[in-house]
Amino acid sequence: MLLMAVAGLCAGSTAKAEKLIALSFDDGPNTTTTVKMLDVLEKHDVVGSFFVIGNNINEESAKIMQRAYKMGCDIQNHSRSHSNMAMLSAEQLKEEIKYTSDMIEKYIGKRPEFFRPPYISVSPRMYENIDLTFICGQGCNDWEATTSAQQRAELVIKNAADGQIVLLHDFVGNEATVEALETIIPELKKQGYRFVTVPELFKLKKITP
Image 1 (cartoon, rainbow, N blue to C red):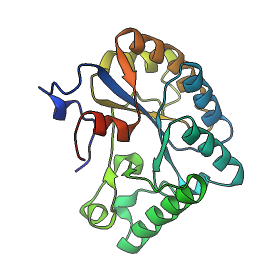
Image 2: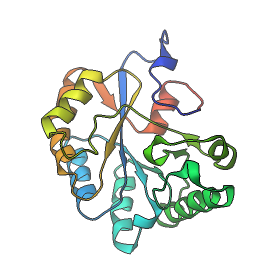
Image 3: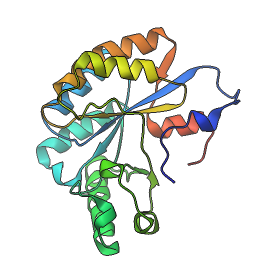
Image 4: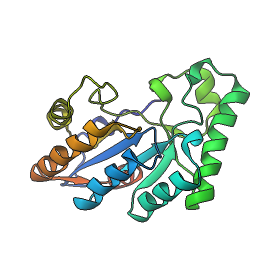
């Protein structure tokens, strides 16, 4: 099952009166855009979840990943090579996941719990061979250069809902999403949202993925 968000699963729940939302970022880590994303999160005192690509993790980018973790963010798996994994063999799938999970554990001391499939492409073989919870999210077309920072912010704010996972990207050069966050975070705070990580979202909503 590919979990897009938890809002629908929480309908009618009275366990938590506050509105919760999780920002998530795909395609890092890197020493440029990821740093700027973290600067914005730190400025506004919020956290997020980073779904990283194993091949992007090296001695320098790992320091950025460690910074995120120390800030209270979490680090999750987004494959090793960002391939269309629905086309891979069972052995290739296992290697993609193991490599990235091993690298995450090497640098932050904790293995990931969640996996976001590249391109949100899934297959029965993936479900059979990847022992992590699959996560999607509510996007805002921020992987497209033609989507302006204002359009990204407006889409996220318009579609925001209690229990939602917002899907964003911190690949190199994605400065428009950095800019959009400066609008998104204050506005959603104004609307009463509290920003949490993906694992915290499930825990606080009392949902076992």
